[in-house]
View 1: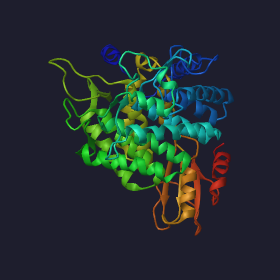
View 2 (view 1 turned 90 degrees about the vertical axis):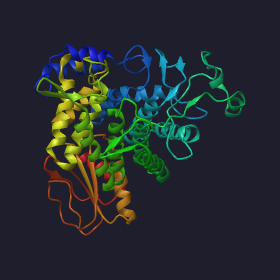
View 3 (view 1 turned 135 degrees about the vertical axis):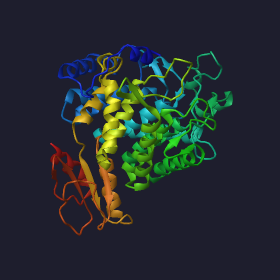
Length: 449
């Protein structure tokens, strides 16, 4: 692959942090690749990249109105890639948002679930929430197995090689009369991790308990059927050539996302175990320098080894960095820096979309705002406050829910109170107590300015 060929020729830096000059170049690339005419980034296939739109939304949250407009224009255009009959997101369109490739694959559903949910939280546009809910409808109708795990993909065409534009213009009954495009019914840990993460984002945006139930049921199935022990997960029922980084990584991220929307510490503990498994089994070295994490630890042939991949190491860096902020265990900070060191090589950082590297750099150099909710778990007022915190429109944040006798993860001493309340803390300070969930978003935004 291109990742492997480039890695063999790269001299990796000691520091995981980029120079100001390289950061500015990556930011310029992000800005320059935006399509001002019809939205989206790049001039080839049109789809939601994930990190790119997330960065634009985050820049908008910080007050960059132009970036927020770009993100909204792109999300608005991407609504046209959603199936208006069955729900679900088609994979991409060619150049114009109109020439659609009708395949529905797992990571496309995850990216769209996450971005439309985040976009709804930030802008309040009900079309974004409706689009995300439509993806969930499709997953439950076509991808969910009888055991509540999720399948992998649906073919683009009813008949292989015959473009299905006319088919997808039909209503539900007429489509079903002709048949349904084939569904790949493999149930992979990685893909189910993607679905769980996407559903967790949708639950944060919607507060619909049935959405959370979908995510938890899928996680329970993976735990029962793909668990290797000690935090690791197999790809399929058989794991030929594995284990693979993607399966354990995406399940670890899924569990961290479940913790972020429930406050249930069992999920944080599972995420920690997965991070430890990754460090033990997928760590990569160049000479004596730890650089990135590899997709598997298997040799392909004598003298040939697997090299790290950019997208996976972006996700490892962000996952491990957030775990460090939750636990303050230095091994997770070191893990984040190891992944970022691979990304910091200019030849890697500048290739393809640059937004993921920019997100990693920002998160390595800034602390996330920390939300704390105080109140009994059975208290509906505490639940409402926690849900409001989970729905705060920033993907980089830490959240906890503690009872009155519990100990906060925050190093900042919280004010004493007997009431059910929430605080947001940043840069060594905490907000005034927030008791009304309807006012949490505004109060937090005012405090974080």
